[in-house]
Length: 98
Image 1 (cartoon, rainbow, N blue to C red):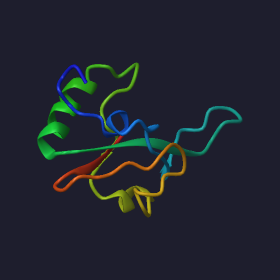
Image 2 (image 1 turned 135 degrees about the vertical axis):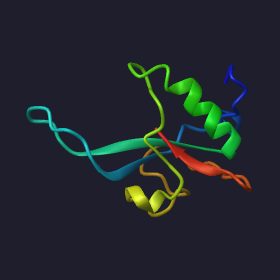
Image 3 (image 1 turned 30 degrees about the horizontal axis):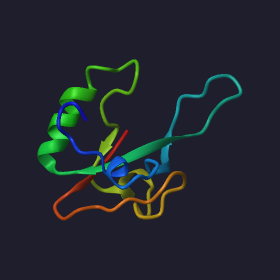
């Protein structure tokens, strides 16, 4: 937010949308499964800035794991999250997943 990137879930007073993916996580003992990602929709220019800012913090959040086509990571409908709330996607925006 300090970098000037609007966060739709904050603007709409919602919880960030989260999705189960088809991307397997590295098993750790008894724990295994697929990655769950959060999604923020943003313009391509804001996406570039978000990558620049978030990639500096790999121990906390890190850079996005996917941008663009949600189906490529097993998400059928970005308006129907598995967890959190649905948020609007503006014209010309792309989904960005962390």
